[in-house]
Image (cartoon, rainbow over all chains, first blue to last red; front, side, top):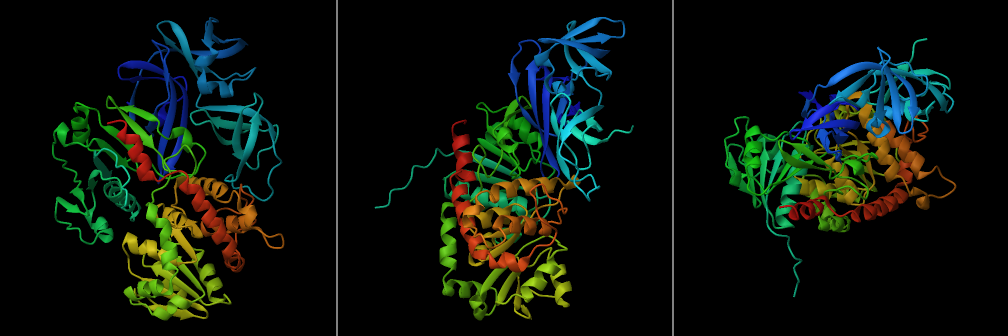
Length: 188
Length: 402
């Protein structure tokens, strides 16, 4: 069993005896150090979707599916195409990528994991930490180097996230793909 | 002839309350239980794991009784060795307050009910933007469905906990005789009711206290500060240079500080209603001051990773929206003054997302703008009233489902 806050886009869990792929997992702190997670789930058999909420420490049953390491090749609407180590092309429908889409970008070299269900690739999991380049953000705020003051930044693919105030345009930043949050400036 | 409003069908409500710290958990649950019973005519059982804390709010409680009735509500002591129970003994509506875990045996019995219970997780209060998107979301657990119910400040949330008659209290407590009687009940001199500024102070330990007290002592008008004993007491003693005791008043320049004992919720409401400004903390007193239409300054419950500061800023964005109509051009804006004061009181960093101008609250200026702040507080109260009260919203939601 895993706690709800450990699930992220691309993983599969069992609910009421059925297999559901996580398309999106939104984590928020509710109060007094408790947290809640809202997931967007897609049923792997029926295609039905639901958006349940869980306490972050609710126990859920993961389903272990076949996986293989892949890297991103190209996008042919509506399919994202990846390549495995044996140069096989793996196609995943855009709608099945969920939150992973936030960090898809041309030329990315991250080694991802394709997840298969009954022989078909149903999702892609990114590494826990990825590095992306900031294409736009407001100028740095003088005097604050604590990293606690945050501001908005846009990545090269248009995705926006909060980053530390000292981050500048062109900086490479580390992102935690489980939460979608900024972790720090990438070491050059 | 008085026409009674139609009451909803009677359901049996079970509220589960685990006391984590302080009195916020049981304070909210006890108010909710009473309102469900008294205003909506529901049958209510309140399960509480800490009767000693509860007793501070409900002195008639017998802490040695596993089951008893108070004010029409069945109170049951929730112990670790939770006894087995039948499905019929579970509630039609079951509320786990603040995400407390229900006992396994209770869940097992609930799962065997012929008609599914309406199972609700009553969540913490937050003004953050994500809350409406989570409110009323379902959680498929234990082969049942649980609803996440979020209180809140905006449409699409469950609203706040208040009784309809609460709004009338400030008018009553504005009368000199009512104020004098209130002070006399706590052994305080009735003459204190005539002081120009009445301020209540309920807070966690706070390093900003010293600066506030210095400012109040230097205030040109006489100030009466009423402090219910609690976590702020040590800081107060340090500033006064003596050990304070409930029922006594301490004078420093224009500031008179009255220390009060821990009091019932009804008395605390009266205290908030009679004051011109209330320093509040956590969730319970924070909500009460707003629903009384009174200026209040919030000491938020501290969380890991400074998560509370995001919540503070989210609240301020809603709370201070619309303050412009209460401002005059020749003074610092009420909005910027209050952002600074709230952030200073909560030790928030200098550079604030809301453009707070600095770390130090200008208490003198804040007090000078109290009339504007009062007008804004009443407008804010009216805005909150449009959301309906939390208990009524819960009843409407649950009645249709069981």
